Amino acid sequence: MKVAISGVTGRMGKTILSLLKEFKDMQFVGGIDREKGFDYLSELPDVIIDFSNHSFISELLEYALKNSCKLVIGTTGYTEEEEKAIKDASNKIAIFKSSNMSIGINVMNVLLKEAVEILGKDTDIEIIEMHHNKKKDAPSGTAKMFYQTIKEVLSSAVPVYGRVGESMRTKNEIGMHSIRAGGIFGIHNVIFAQDDEIFELKHTALSRRAFARGALKAVEFISKKEKGLYSMLDLLKEELK
Image (cartoon, rainbow, N blue to C red):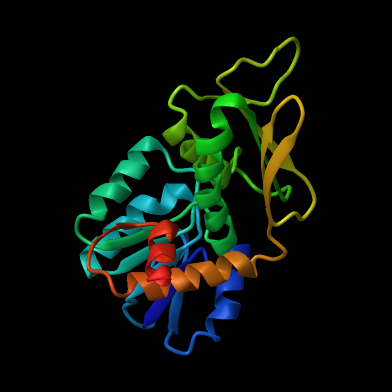
């Protein structure tokens, strides 16, 4: 498979590039960024991995549709209009999109849904996410993914982004808290609190390689698809077969 990386000069792009050599069936054919565009590709890629900026998605989709390239999207912070453009494009090409490419995070998301189904109605739920001090978007895409999982079960759930002043908790609140400090790769906690006990789901990324490995496994997965919008849940389901 011929693989290109959009955002190759960024932290995640460099990590993916360094790990790609461990995947013997993949060949790196060039990096893409907004300034240089697609001119530096040595060959037409089969799959483009995107860890760039949400504002680059229009150009990326246009290129992918024109050249029948498949996409693995790990970028977050998309607007509703951009999300719609991705979904529309998936009617013609195969797109793998996940707010977090870590296998562990996505297992945690599966467990989260089960926990909410059992504990959700009688429990206060809070989401806390921690990232490095250069991360631009808050809450993280992963925290938003967790909230959507909770809302699938608790339709009356309402997000509350931090608290200040007199703000007594209401029954339907899902607290969303973002910490930006130092070089934290990513720590996510979901807390279920009752009067007499606390249950907690937690994931800690020890390096960016956790996300890079997941992205490259997504390349393997999407290479077998012709069109459609896929997620890490689809990958996990296929691995369990």
